[in-house]
Length: 333
Image 1 (tube, rainbow, N blue to C red):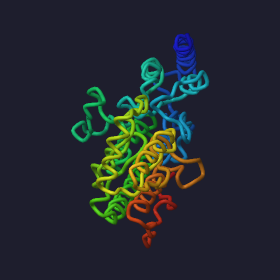
Image 2: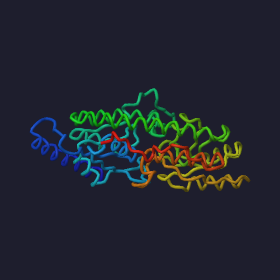
Image 3: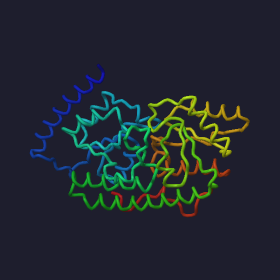
Image 4: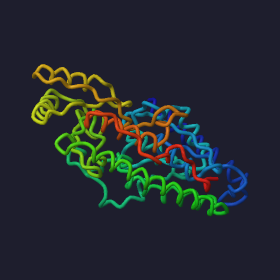
């Protein structure tokens, strides 16, 4: 019943707003150069991406805030109103926002929708057998892969607002340089962990792109999607892995309940080995707005520093000159 009401609301709002835009625009496509582009982004990573590229030309509303799990997210009536009023909706795709797929389909008839992962070559994507033939959607954990979403987002803004193409291209280029710096930082930090200890165990299996890119074996108590529940067999398999390799720490995630990791910790300690929680990682959501972790770059830096600090046995030292988190490009407008 709730879904039927939401879909009906989508149809009514989209039709009303579509007619209103046609009257106001007086043309098939509205000239947006005189005002900010109204953007709705599903996740914090995407909202940050569009803000970096759009700069002062966009007004971005993020639907999923800190600690929100996109796998389980359901659009509210307020979300529907915000999406229907937007000029464009940016979303991840690859079934990350699974429960919102039908909403995007309906919205796409009246409001432009852009899946930022459409710009990533499919041969670069992971397709785990347990994910029923679909791709792993957590592409942002490989910085070099996430960088490929920049062109997808910038091209969409250019097509909507061609008069400011130079701005968008300059911002995109500057952001790509910062992402390249970030990727190098992650690789240098990862190299500080002894190869035998490069085993990353988290609450759910979101870090496979991270593992492939930076040389870690990744294991999660839950599957790719948090819809799946962790069972006794999952916990016991990880207990054996931890005991065999003397893995010193496991990690919790800000958007996933901690109970599964705590159960794993208890099972390992029952086997005579002390396992500690190495810290909290950001997986499917950014940190609080206004903090370093509230940006994509800050989130990635927090994650790798936390992982290395726990698995290498000491907190990672800050690199001289690694100030790109606080640096904002002069070209950003």
